Length: 475
Ligand code: FAD
Ligand code: NAI
Image 1 (cartoon, rainbow, N blue to C red):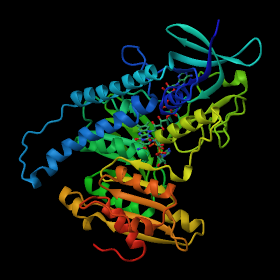
Image 2: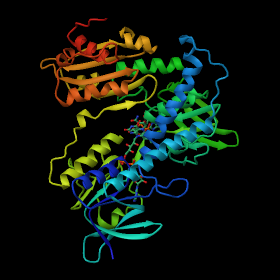
Image 3: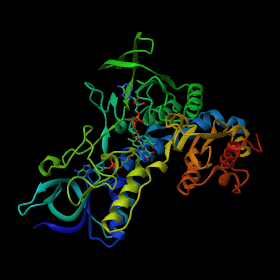
Image 4: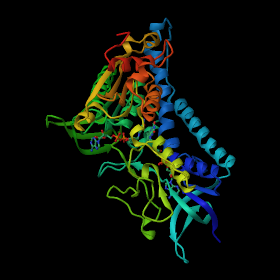
């Protein structure tokens, strides 16, 4: 006998668990199925983000940043710290605790919101009477039926053809977050978000880090001026990034990993490292869903095809997050989850792709929302630009962190803000003001006339807005 629900959510990552909670808040009887297991085989909801993504990576970034501060920056504050050591096992254990707190938090939220949680793999099965059931294969077999189904099965790391992840020498994001000792030499393929964040963690802890990037441009999606500034900072830190390479054969052995590649000049090179992280993007995950049985349409990348409302080709079946088109970001997945739950309830859930912020949690942090200068040029939009360096910001000087700038782009005629790009301290927090401003269709003049606390990093945003009209006060 199958259990009946109004809404079944398959996947308990940020897209799925948030959709389940929102649907429950709206009065639906909701089930959420997630297969992730913790070390003891128990449930670990939260998906990639909680288990092997956003949360653990930020925990390691924090630990490694403390280490770097103690080693390199305490002295300028008059603090003597001798014999500073990193206990990698303890750092990893702390990260695991942070992950578990998040897993437990989600299980608590399910209880609080009366979401029925099923631990196991959900797959579509054709029902005898037409339609479909969702079979859950876990510790116990269950059969569920739902009036509406939301698929939020996320994504997996893309492997290099012919080089599968062994998570010992060739690591995906999963293995990269569980390395037990600082490798002497660490290689990474791909200088995207994971490459830079993970490369930063292990460089700060003492690894010699080389990142091989296929494209000739560094961070091509980022505003050029911001990407250049970031690259300068990474070069200074000793993060070696080789652009325009073509990766060839990869050999693993007792001595580690050997990567043959040609550099940007076409010269044959090789890189020998103790461990290699492959961070060349992610692929949508529909493994085990049994999509063929019910004719769920996938695109050529394997992503579930959805319309602007996240509806799939099957009636009553929706899909959100990394498994569909759009940026693979936790907050994008969450927004889609909320919007779908609200649409199911007959409301007008909405996700504005133009104001989804991006953040790279390196030091300096890189954050942006809206269009870059190069995109505006390509789109033929007339714009004004203003920027303000953190060097001229009192709070940044007091913090001892003056790298970078805030840059604002506004429409030449209407002054509406079209993009804000930040490289520097706390960019991840500063970008929120820009997102709010853009959601409310603010002009640069609006930001320029709003009182910002002194001394604060956010004054750099106000000054960048003033710079759009060529009237900065502090630079
Ligand atoms: P996921 O989080 O992948 O969750 C999918 C869940 O569904 C998983 O638990 C999976 O086990 C489960 N599942 C899959 N198939 C089935 C099935 N058939 N039955 C039952 N369960 C199933 N994004 C940010 O916004 N900020 C960051 O700082 C950030 N850092 C990241 C760092 C790393 C190293 C990585 C890899 C990613 C990071 N991301 C970050 C991206 C972010 O993790 C994803 O965008 C986000 O997790 C997508 O959410 P989702 O719900 O779509 O899928
Ligand atoms: P990515 O798409 O950010 O970067 C991949 C990089 O690898 C690109 O620069 C690409 O040109 C390069 N590349 C691809 N194939 C290559 C090859 N064969 N040889 C050399 N270089 C190659 O992907 P990444 O870093 O794996 O992260 C996946 C996704 O996870 C991100 O796009 C993002 O959506 C999400 N994420 C978000 C974070 C955040 O928000 N802070 C942190 C980490 C991941």
